[in-house]
Length: 276
Image 1: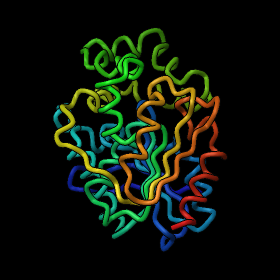
Image 2: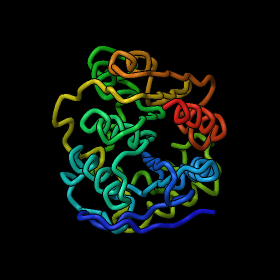
Image 3: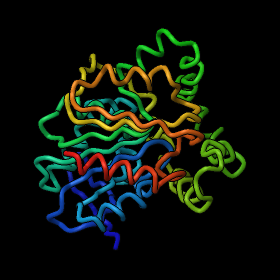
Image 4: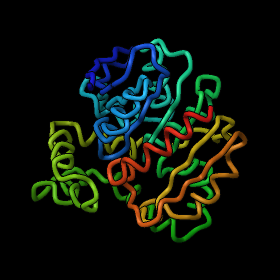
């Protein structure tokens, strides 16, 4: 059974989905762009059934109750602060952290800066930011893949993404995510201010500091057909983890791992959690 939560913090109230007993081992799952907490629906349900307390929030800008207008309000400090604030509101002193896409980047930063708060880290698709930064400086392939990050800083992006029944937004999912789920993402991001808030993650100035290596036990899951994140940063990520590390490469799977192969990812996640 899925629970629907409102999580109050100083920044505002986050909407979230959750499952599992209140006293279960806590797991926080962070979604990416242009999605929402429901991208983790399968994982949350299975984790809850296995006795974990799994919570997936709609992150800053995606929750209507936490939707500041200025791009500066979507920096790394704010995003990591949200993770800690949600954990505090849930009364979690220590928890397992899972993130995909932008959620993966936030998870890496949180693990680097607050390792004492995490039991484990699972990053899906997103390499360690240090590895990605190095690839962006040295690898032409990754530079081409990441061009969209610069393009989306344009003020015309919202109009282009939502034109013709959000054709461009829908095309991002590469027909790998169920149509009904894509319809729901489009509906949410078509609300006034919602898409701008989501794009402000790209428009905020970052990085604001040099990220350190991660000591938390880490699982990194990357897929070979990811159009945004190439193999250079994926393979280098192991050099940015000093703790126990597992790298899982999924062949012939797109960027949308949590929804394209939910059973595969969930099995890997449960194995990782059980080891620590």
